[in-house]
Image 1: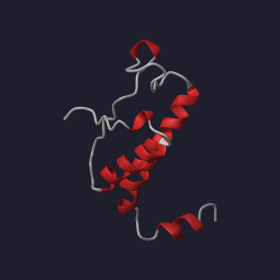
Image 2: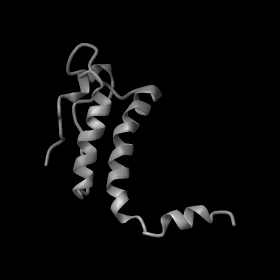
Image 3: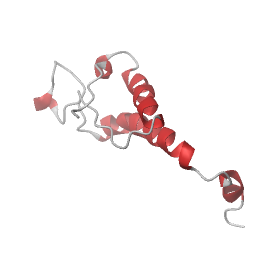
Image 4: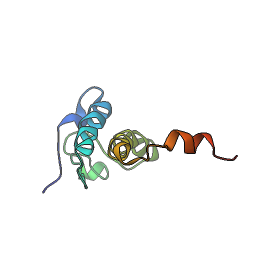
Length: 91
């Protein structure tokens, strides 16, 4: 399957919209998500001033997407006694 280019990359609040979109895919149990539409640098822009991923600040914004997908995938797999385990860390 090819990358999932949603077109949300350039929209207002695009990172939040993408995070919600990919989180739903992860919640359904998808094992691998390949996003699309983000250039590795300016030379790869698909449009003037399009999304790219070549600086730390751009990577940090993209972590919203990956973080939400990871959380949604992991939630059903957490042990039921996780709150107890976390509350007893360091005791």
